[in-house]
Amino acid sequence: MFKSLKEDIEVIFDQDPAARSYIEVILTYSGLHAIWAHRLAHALFKRKWFFLARAISQISRFFTGIEIHPGAKIGKRLFIDHGMAVVIGETCEIGDNVTIYQGVTLGGTGKEKGKRHPTIQDNVLIATGAKVLGSITVGENSKIGAGSVVLHNVPPNSTVVGIPGKVRVQNGVRIDKDLNHRDLPDPVADRFKELEEELQVLKRELQQLKEGKIKHDH
Image (cartoon, rainbow, N blue to C red):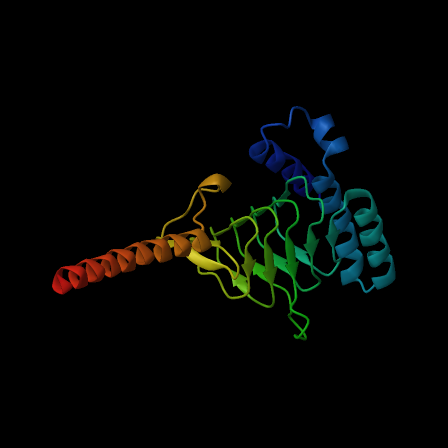
């Protein structure tokens, strides 16, 4: 247990350059508080103390702004950065070395029974405001871009962006976890650019037709 608690603290120093001291991390990091509360709630949930587990979950939500259902399975070294409005559903499974930013939802679609929340494999990064919905799997070493809505399985070593989320990078090798949100591809902007280029081509062709008609009339 103490090894797990130490790992929860150490991952913050690895991921957050603003972390300065152990006492600061232990007392002020709401993501850490939410994870520790979940570990207790999950232990009670497995022993079928459902009400007490949910009570601890809701108290943690009140103080941290992070809602983790006590039934969710969370691996080692989860880092929730800031974390306000993070929601993790009951049947969600999270692997090791996962990073989650504020506003992320790992939820269901409302239509499924049984396993209805996503499985997040090892070394995944989920950026601010992303929604991963349904009983899907996000493969290891993948990244979900800020604001994306992911409704389908994500292969390992992929970068997903957009609404709905689409795989934009997949090179078969491990992708570094240092996700630069400013450099994410924008599929909507890319499509507008393509349409603009097509429009310019049509304008040129129309102008050529007009000029040809004028010359022909003369």
